[in-house]
Image (spheres, rainbow, N blue to C red):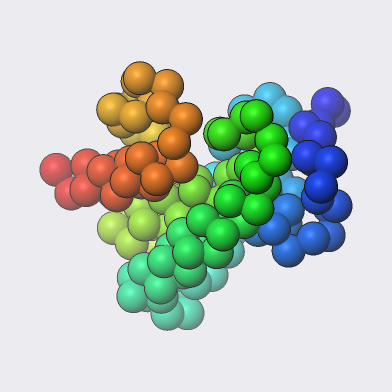
Length: 149
């Protein structure tokens, strides 16, 4: 399997690389975001089972905050301002989506499918191919709010 490379200033076990790639799942090719979302599904379901929707909201907020830091460390000194291996935003977005899903295999599958579809098809910043982490983070909230409709 082909894999993405880390930028020269990061090592695999550096905190920024582990967080940004969600423990390496973002390094998988093709469809890094899908791999990241898939890797986030089991931990998200465990958080939901143990702590409910509020736990998922806290987890998503932590993923967002840590992800913002890790992404900044990743992109400093690189030309690519939206590298494919950074999937922590997908983790936060999936966990937001799971706040509305029933804790069943079907509920998890529907949440995963809806999130991946909304992330790639419905989001304004994805349609215009925006390369700004902040706008993509706003998109997470848009996809979550889209689940309410």
